Amino acid sequence: MSSFRIDRISEEVRHAVDAIIRDMNDPRISGTYAVTRADVTRDLRWAKVYVSVLEDDKADEMIKALKKAAGYIRHELGLRVDLRYTPELLFERDRNIAYGAHIAQVLKNVIPQEEDSHGEEPREEEKEN
Image (cartoon, rainbow, N blue to C red; front, side, top):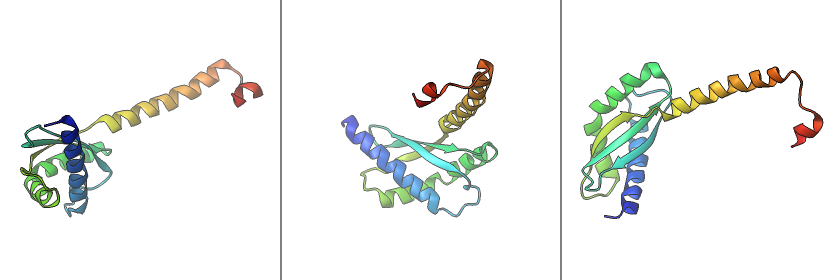
């Protein structure tokens, strides 16, 4: 099977799983989160779904809730996506967005310190460029 087809199926699975999770009424699944990626195997038997949770205190509980609800989510996925085999879902926490936010905060703290260390503000010609 071509990798292009697998990529399309992975994106369709990601989109459908995201919609299914948003429709669920589980109080453990709340807050700011995003389904960032889904990797479907070539034989369409397994899909690893990466979920990014911005609140660290809720992240572990939410991933546990998703793992427990994997059967329900798989059933709903089978109804929404037309595939010969509905893949088994494995949920993993994706830390890339949280890491990116941390790096942005570090850069925000470093840049004002560098401007203060030069001692003077940039001239008008430098501000335009």
